[in-house]
Length: 233
View: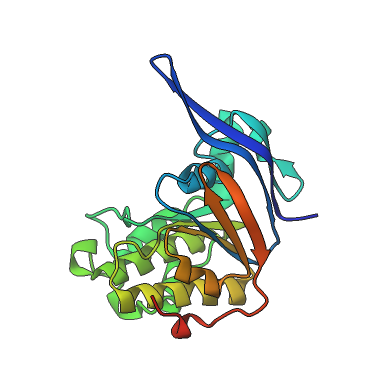
């Protein structure tokens, strides 16, 4: 049984009597421990898809499963618990708390669960041992994104969801962040889903899902994974 499953998922937004179809007939599967890149142009439905998988939005039709659990059947309380314990989020903009240090930003996430990875340990893993007491304004964009990744990983989520994680970064810093995500997936066996409009990133993925006009047009397993260091865009 696949770790993530979308079955005939649809999402319609209704406002002032106008309905907009964001997703329709979406079907795909992701195996446990894979890096999956979901690629498509702006407006293709990638973020809606990620928000449904992350329990931040609800679908209109179909079903979504994480392992044996049908998360699309959860009520608000169960969705809150799912977001708290099972999912780590990394966004394009880092969403750090400005008046807390790097260490404190990670510790906040660690307090959500019983057995987190110690904040100092995970910040060392992302190369920030010497920046623990720095505030976000004292960190570069790449360093802030590393703190955000450390914060997401500290609670040992079953699923790490990344929304354009390199979108606000320069080329070299972006590659360093992708290498970090790839390494964390491999060393921790973590399932990582990255959404992007940058097709070059598909080379690093175990699985590539292409989205267009609100539906999945192609799913393929990548038989020749390229190390992040060798990807050019």
